[in-house]
Length: 587
Image (cartoon, rainbow, N blue to C red; front, top):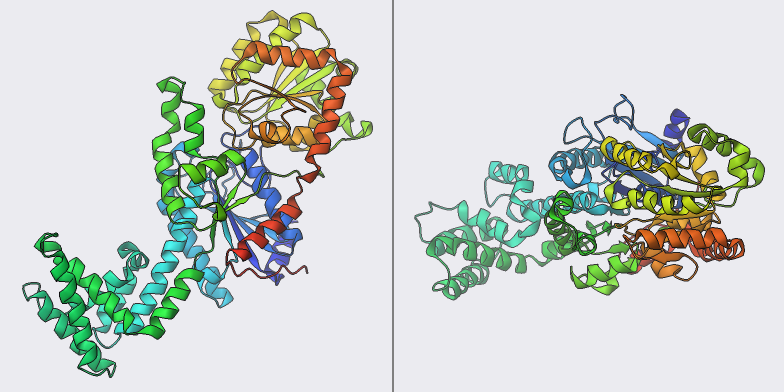
């Protein structure tokens, strides 16, 4: 199948879109509710890719590779194909071990270098420039956003290096220009074109001991001669611009730094005299920026959620470092997709992103997976639950099922669910709690110990570990109550999926989907309150008609969360923002 998809992918004549999702175990097969740092964001990216495929695009998803697959010895280094026109490319960097998202910054330099080279090679094979390869580069979470931002920086360096070459070839030695081009990235040419241009001209004339104005006149005369300019006005204009700049900074800047002011002034004046090159430079610098960021979560939001937690809980989350990365990305990115109202608000209030640069794109639902299943479609999943729990299938069918699945992480508060369910189990013997997620061994061990310490949970609360993908959809559908006590959610995709599957929901007030879209249909309780969770679950179990009506209303409310419609609206928004995105072409 992979070979067939590979051939179809290469043959397709569709416009290309890139998605970058860098941490966790991203891939075609997502260990849902199992692997660390892997879950809703990965489901979002894969579903978006499929929607873009349906709209007629060819999609490349970039993810970190070079380390083993989840619970496997096989290294993530070969392309994978999610569909005929959707591929995964794994980017090495940071070593051959899994890295938690809080520590992923150590891998980024290597990954950016590899990604840049990969894009350049594909662009060369296609006969285009690197920034022309993809219509859009859509990054997910801050680590991927840094990669997208740095790609654009490198492309801007290329553009400026080309302009400098056109302006100065013949006026300075070829070997100096060639060296300048080779060093374009560490010089960050795209960040200060005029300063670099002036510096190159001045630095090529005489020695640093020669007065700056004299060196400027020598450089201006050589440039004017090479390009056939009139020696009067142009030279005087360049020298005059530098003299004025130096007069302005003479008493404000240390003499050793006057060369910076001179370089900037000379470069600006030179660009003003070269309108054709300058206009092309400005146009090209604008069109290379194809980057759009989907944060999924923000340090500024999560830090607020954890403000009352002790240092030993907050410290590993590295909020200060994360916010610095996010601030840099926001300063250099021109379009954003917010998956929740809280994220949109923080982009505006904490990072000063203008409202018109934010597109609201909440997670949607794969309706082929998350739906209401017929009885015969549930049989294999009942057998799976019986196997992992030791409870007979008929007993499970006649009882009630409470379910939660997410990565094994302290912020998901699976311990609170066990505590709350212990209170429920004292009053009812027909209800079972299944909690998915693994393999974080220490946390899994502590949850197992908590469960085993409460006799009322024996045979009633089951920690399933990783749940096979084929059982995810049916399990959501057969669930009577989906419970999430999570205290750190960007949106709450699992709650949305449960709602679409026809399950009633009990969740914390830190799950944005529930608070924004279904505050009356879901049972929303204060985060961290064991008794409130227990009471909400008990109330729904005791009132079948209320539980079933809430589940029906939740399923109805999710109908608008359609991936293909939202993806089309997203591309239309980007076109309005000035992105030159080709229309999709179905093969």
